[in-house]
Length: 205
Image (cartoon, rainbow, N blue to C red; front, top):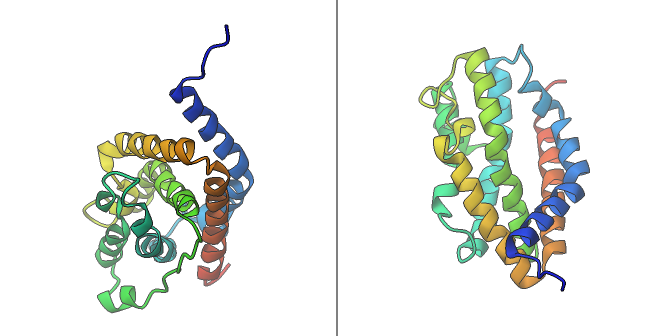
């Protein structure tokens, strides 16, 4: 007798497929000039501010144009907003409120909830990498969550729990709606959007 696949195994299968199909666009973003610069041993405070300024535009854009369609799908949605942490970091490292308000914001315009969910997968996934970046910036620039590195600190000790909660709701939507393809396309497009956005933010190479 054939065993009926468990919901958990279906979740794992979807996540594995998602990671495989976004691997190329994800890798390209990791190879972006700003992405590599932020991990450099010689990263400077202006480098750090340049990276945060760019990420502010896509993070706030996601909150402004993506989150509203996901309020009935993803739990603790308000707690997942992190653009204010970037504002906090920029202010702590010398930016003025006027400089922050002048930063450009990306206007996400995906056609479906599924694509928006793919975009949020990318932004939520960045909280995991943020822990690595936090350690690096703390070591090289001496910043803490209180003194300019709150964004990379993210959810702090709750990062793992918040990610698991997101993945559970995320995969449940994919299974119940059969819109895995649209979600994956939204994620691929978002990696590319962020890659291009960071390119435009580079002042000097």
